[in-house]
Length: 147
Image (tube, rainbow, N blue to C red; front, side, top):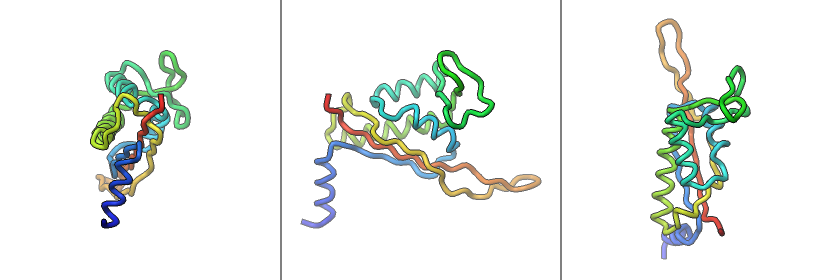
């Protein structure tokens, strides 16, 4: 048996699934706050929360990057980051499909690891001067809960 097949079999036996998106044109600061909002939640519940954020029913609480951010009902400072929420929703759908492919139960999946890191920034030319473009990498890992 080759090494690649052994690694693939070990991954199938593991009770987790991962997905990542690279160089998304979304804000890293907003992604950081959304990641803190969704971490350690049930996958289905997290997807429902993101849909409510996109529909502007509930706000994402901003705890770190909250300077000059207004208060929202039920929480302190918060916002409705639609574009970043759509990117997270796409990523969660992808990790759900990966988990289903591995044979994991979708009802028991918990988001165990969720990271947003800054990607490479390219220069974007403007009329008077140039600026750096926003790029963010996202990584998610879900595990089956014991309950």
